[in-house]
Length: 126
Image 1 (cartoon, one colour):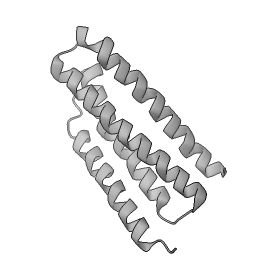
Image 2 (cartoon, one colour; image 1 turned 90 degrees about the vertical axis):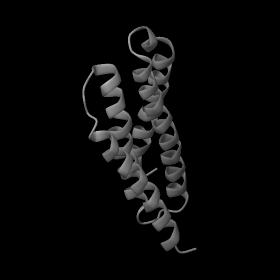
Image 3 (cartoon, rainbow, N blue to C red; image 1 turned 90 degrees about the horizontal axis):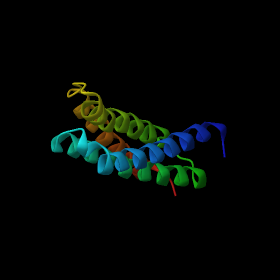
Image 4 (cartoon, rainbow, N blue to C red; image 1 turned 45 degrees about the vertical axis):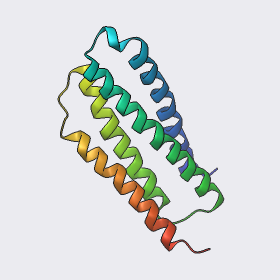
């Protein structure tokens, strides 16, 4: 494993761990403290974080087997998107912060990551 990839693996591990912890809290602790809308917001954040954590894991495995230019961009956009999209939902539900403008920016970054993956795949040589 290259040193640069070690940081990505750490981010994926932290994302997976925090996803499970926040999901458990949303299921067991948060309903007693927050509205059903806020619980739903955390569940949405966890769901998006889960899918993108798995997607980052898949790109890391692909990168280990066949490094391609652009894979780092895909990972970066997904990480940024997960932090902004899911993180803003968590901040709103758990901290009462109003970060509504950050959520769609995170969504755009997530979409950008998927489109970057498409481009990386299309330009990859066999």
